[in-house]
Length: 367
Length: 263
View 1 (cartoon, each protein chain N blue to C red):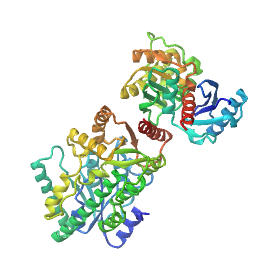
View 2 (cartoon, chains in turn yellow, cyan):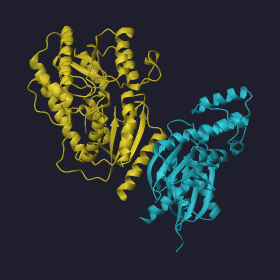
View 3 (cartoon, chains in turn green, red):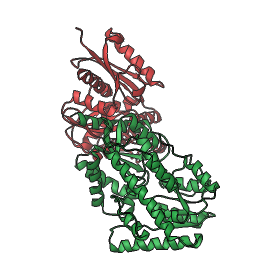
View 4 (cartoon, chains in turn cyan, purple):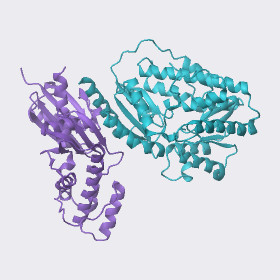
């Protein structure tokens, strides 16, 4: 049984013990560099509770990730003491950075990190190395010079975490992971706020058997930005549906596609790592590449169907979604698309859709 | 040896429908009652009515499949299946060449593609909104002071139509109120409402496509005007069962029969 600390309690304890904590928005950022500055990055985009304050600052058609992040910033200012980091994931999050910094105002620094977009080549690699350097310089203004040894140690720790997550992901695809759908995503999401040493212990505590665990579950892959709501994951468990693979920005899109060599030069390692992450709608890359990647994962995991878990008003994902669904259906893969609001349980209609997808997949297994 | 008997019960948001079959697939009883506030109780009442009508007891029934949004609450069910699968199977039983099922139920609508054996191939369903459903028509009938039968008068396809642009039930009701305030004839508003539902369904149809014969199920299939308009929009005839409300329960009963036969 996993013992995962509660996010709020853990961060409160860290804060009370003098730990510097930076509130981070989704999704891709150089966590190793923050660790090297003794800063704990904590993702803040999914706090529980109602949205009471954020709506006053945002239009109605903004995605719940932005709304919930702002709600946290307005409601829980005491936990975050080292600033907020806004990676350039989408225009809505970038606009939120502007609002928080220039219009709302917070008592801690607000940072941006402009990930490269589009085609990746030598120029974009150089650009990424440059922005890493710029980010280092900006952090040094607040936190003093970067200790290169600490960065090297942080990269080694990050490498171990990535390698372990890759092993767990592969174990899940081959029925060797002794975790339910809910437990797997709890484990993955613990990486959003735990100290790397604590997180690695948690990952290492999962033992992976050599042989597959026999089961007769229907196999699904989930794609989108965020993992399905815990209620949905439990419902999959109830229905004997196994999420054998994912293409989630909060999940496998953060794990390099292959195991990297152990880091030698930290900056080179971080650059290499970024460009080995799977294709993602927020990086505005080639749709063909993303489709090929998705197909490969479907093949490797023997997923029988794909569930798109779409965050409402998520522009980058919605641009790709329609074309991905069409391309998958053309190859005969059943697809179900569901909207998510992050919080709130499953409606009867949601349950019916999921159950119907399960029935469809089981019918195919029988025939 | 007496014939084995099978029941399908569809606990919907507006009505609870039950079908009793023998092992040859012959329908022995069909019951439709209002669901009210307690779906579990409605299912019990419908079951008892069917048994009373056929002079049977619960012990005579070999298997029961529950479907509909209240499927999990049916205590006497031996299995449960979604209404999406059940409407596919039910439509296939009634019209074996069906390739596409359009089900417009009380609180949701669905388009289902099925294969030559009635098995689901793909589906789409409306999302958290009553637009394009039976409840939409009920709300509008109330507002227009018409009963549902009057609201289903065959549409005059050439006649004038009041545009109801919104596909949200609440906003559409506001539009209807505005039209009434402008003394727009009720027939034109009814035309507009039917067109609004068909447009809503059409967007779902286009998302998964049409194949084979089209069968319309669910209580809204009793709306003759809407059927005419849907046929015009699809450019092909639509199969309408004699009792479209019962198709989900019929499919559930056949699933119970098949499941029992296969052990």
